[in-house]
Amino acid sequence: MTTPTAGEQEVWDRLWAAERLPRGRAQIAALEAGLREADALGSPELRFGARIFLTSAYQQGGEPAKAFVPFAWCLAVHDRGEADPRWTHDLHWYFKFMAGSMATFPEVPLERTRAVLDDMERRYRTAGYSMNPVHQYRAVLARHVGDREAAAEQYRLWSAAPRGQMSDCVGCEPSDKVAHLAWLGRYADAAEVAEPVLGGQFSCVEQPQHILTELLLPYVHIGRYDDAVQAHRRAYRAMRHDPAQLQSIATHVAFCALTGNHARGLDLVERHLGWLDAPPTPYAEQEFAAAAALTLRLVAEGGHGDAPVRRAG
Image 1 (cartoon, rainbow, N blue to C red):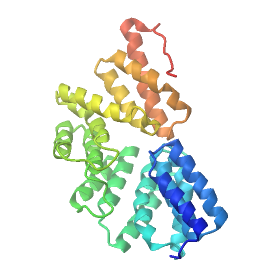
Image 2: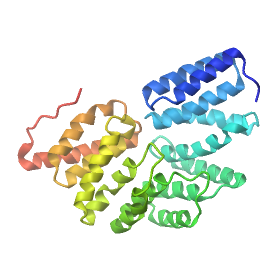
Image 3: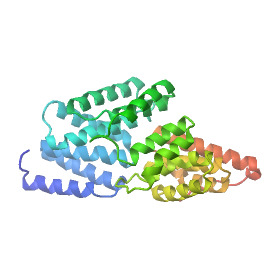
Image 4: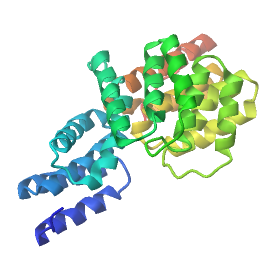
């Protein structure tokens, strides 16, 4: 690592300030401006750091499709041996972003997603990391494409592998396990997996709203209706202003529809309908549209087919 010039240090300062902003469009715009400055100065360290920051900002700010290019750029620089080692952990961590996002874009071939997971495994093994997250994201992919046999095997391997440096946080990893068990109809097991986590402290901005969202339908299926209502209220409050959470919002809309709370479901549809103008992923768009369609059908079947749907804002 070379000592930055005064001009380069100013850009670093702006990048770090932008990195600390709340995630979303404002943060992304600030980091994109920093990237332009970094490229203009030509500093290899600055150019790499700006793209590392942007990869995370795009992923968590509702524009994950844009994360692929800076991630690939950084990976190529790293593989040429030209990257500052301080970013290696981040680069390895962001493999999970890529693996988790690719399946939500139908234009990305399935084999390409599997190849990224294979590359992730190779790099994690070389670095000495646990295979815990590799099996986790393979299980997620298998679930996404409906491969029950592969999902079961990857879930077994995932559960057997110890947590390590690259493992998702203590709230996010169980969230995926809850989703897996609910997908299998093992609702009581899903709630049991979540129980120890809900009593702890969360350091991740994604939690506890994500695990509570995954618990909505399991709670209903096992008769824990009060817990389901509280989970809905608490989780929805935490994500209602974040367009990046459109897929999770869809789960809340579906929850309201399936539990007979059609008025509440219609209210959520109206509040978030505008988010379809710029959905974070095609999959999130599909999930919200499906949940909204279910809600509107049930409202119509309930004798209120002439109720207007008003787009918020």
